[in-house]
Image (tube, rainbow, N blue to C red; front, side, top):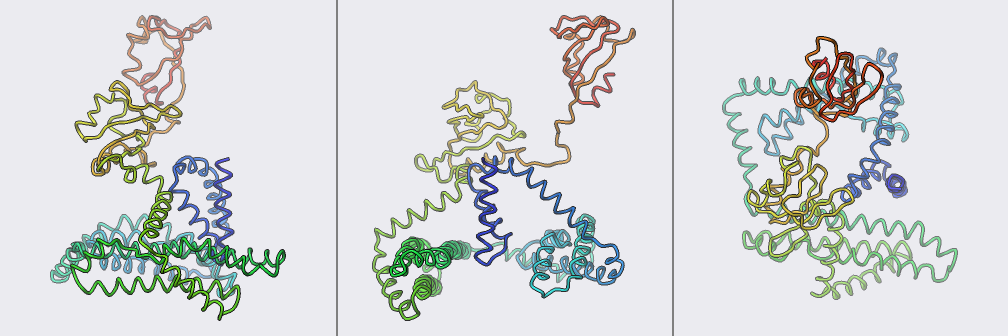
Length: 519
């Protein structure tokens, strides 16, 4: 059910995105971003991974089948020229762009050298260009060939990043090196007022983007589906009902869009730091109000006429401004806070930032990783309270919930610990407890590293006369003795007192390399 619902949401949002005039990829991306913030994100990722691998394999097989060797041979010159342009251009512009943002020269060059390819998204753009008739169909295999070449060469350019940096640093003029370091230092050391202004502006743009998207979706649904359906049922009242339904659904988001995006204390600090900041804040407020008015006028104009839209829309907007009392603002901020908390439920639950108990104490739910240094320890031995000042309020282990565990309870990978502490304490503890949750790695152990094998004991075996306990097979070779097969065909389960005799066959489970040395 979880797999079907997740795929249904993805496909549904993709289809809805196409109906709204956007691409399939954008709709799927938006739904993926939404699902990534819920509490079931890890479980959904597990059930979706096989489907992702299947479609990924089909995609790359199809891409490989599109590589026409005859086309490559015929257009080898433009393919090589385009590949060189992509590689050199991405290195130059990537490095230059990172330098502008204030990054050091080493990081800038490493970033530029790691961007020397065009990804599979280029295929989507090329396909769209061909479907619209603005690209010649012969361009597509050329794009595929350039993508294959640049993808193949990217690891080598990543390895060349450090030698290239050493060469540039050695031959770079001192004055230019001084200017780059000075610019980097100035760009990274931002003043408090600038950081505050960036925070306010980011919140302002995010609110406009989010609420405008929701309002536009309501308008499209009303005009494309609701109004035509009402006209077939009750033609005389269809427009009035469409007005009421659309404006009712839009009103919470219009009110939230019209309210200030910055807090009162933030505005006071900005104005106190520099009186010039008062003008941008006023302009931002006017823009939000005009945007809200524009949505209302457009909706009424599309349903009725331009004259009705301007007159009624302006009257509704004035009433909405009058209704923005202090009590209503407080209520709308509460609704907005609930909306964003639901949107970021998973991260808030993990960090505990929105789960205040008293004062600055938070309750966070953190999953124990396989690399956590406390794995296997009892709570009393982990010294979490003495080291980090936090308390363990609960342990979720599978379907079992342990409330207020005692000091003898052990910590295992996969446990979800209910940690109580300040925000600073929890943020410091998060990377320690979650160690090993990331996947990948060259030295990662796999299930296929363990296998079952058998060893025949000869007359000269040093194990002859020993027992399963005194042979120390588990300690020396990290192997588990499963059964002992005697020469007469009978089996014994090891109890620690079984003597090994010539001709016995030992059935062992362990690492193949260790078992080979045991043989």
